[in-house]
Image (cartoon, rainbow, N blue to C red):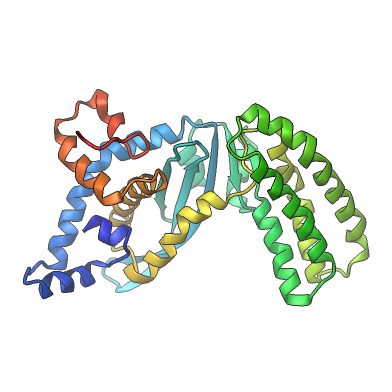
Length: 319
C-alpha cells in the first residue's frame, strides 16, 4: 500500500476500489492507519538516513509546493516539501515537510552542517551561505535561460551560449567516474578556459543588448550567478548542476496530481518520511517493494547498533 501510494502514485481511494474489485473490503481509513503504522515503524531508519545525509560534504537542495488540507475548513493551503540529496556514489534522499517556503526550514534541517550546497537562486538559502556553507550554482538552470530565449525569440546569441555550455557538459561526461582529484585536474585543464571565455563573452555582450529583453535577462541571470556557477571548478567532488535532486522531486509532481493534498501537517511529515526511504532505495537500484517488505520483517529483531544495515543505500536482501 505504501509503495502503491508513494512510488506508483495510487491514492488510497483508488486502492480501496482495487481491493473491493478483488473482494477485499478495505476502507480508506484502514489503509491510512496501516500506512501510518508503517511510518512509525520506519522512523528509526528515517532518523538514521537524515544523520547519514548530514555527514556528506556535498548536498543538493530544492523545494516544491504541496497542498495541505485545512482542518475543519474544507480548504487547502500551500505547504512545501524541501528535498535534499547527497552527491555520493550511494545517494541518500530526504524530503522535509514544511509549513512554508521560508529559508528558516533549510537552516533548521541542516543545523550545524557546513558543506557545499547545490541550489537554484532561491533567496531562502542565502542565510546559509552567509554562515559558512559553500554555494554551488546550477549550470542546468543557466542553460535553461538560453534554451527559453532561443525558443521565444530565435536569438543568435542563445545558440552560441548553448554551444559553449554543452562543451562543459561534454567534459563532465569524459571525466565521469573518475576520482575527485582527477576530475578537478581535468576540469582545470579543459573546462576552466571555456568558462573564462564564456564569462568574458557575456560581459562584453551585456551592455550591448536591449534592457529588459529576454537576452538581457538570460545574460544577467548567468552573470549574477557566476561566482556560484564557477565553484564546481574548485573541487572535484562538486557537481555541475542540480539535476539529481530535480529528478528526485519530479515524481512528487505526479503524486501531487493524484493525492490532491496532504490531510494534515503530521500526515505530510509521515508521507515525507516514507517517501525519503523509498526514493533512496530506488536511487540505489533497489526495488522499493522488496526493500520495504524485507526491512519491515527484519526491523523488529534488529539491534539499534545494526540499524545502518537496513538503510536503503546500504541494504542487502536477507539470505
